[in-house]
Length: 209
Image 1 (cartoon, rainbow, N blue to C red):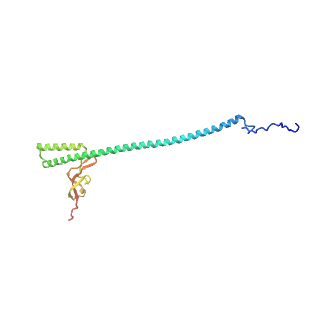
Image 2: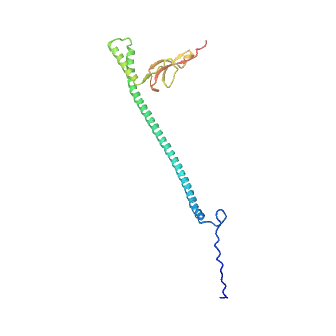
Image 3: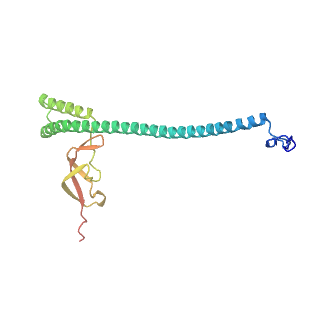
């Protein structure tokens, strides 16, 4: 019909974005490649984060392990220190017991010494028997580690001797020196179990005429 106007023009083509090289619309392959890159980048970022998390956890575990090792080492040191303290205390108690037994022996030796001092020149079998008993008791005492103190001629030391008598001297060099031993003193290792009883010199300047 003359009144109808027929449009023969083709519909406008849908506008496509330019391709990667800018020379034309994006191809289907390029569009597919672009869509695949996003998940891959996301996956790579996720792997990096996971590695960082695992590294942090590993570092935390390493620190905890180091702390545990130090704690075990400290506990082992405390255990060794405790064993040493117990050993030292046991040795100390044994020394105290040895000292107590030794003092009993020493007192018996003192009694025998007093008997022998009265009869120093006695050579009878009885006197010789007493001397033998004294020597045996002294040997038993010494076998426990007891040593007799050598104090005569030494400066007076209140840690090893008790001054029970005094002797006046006119020699300054002899002042406060032990001039006689009235009862023997003994030590066990580094402990004095019985101090000696001694006579000590006291210097007194001569009276000037």
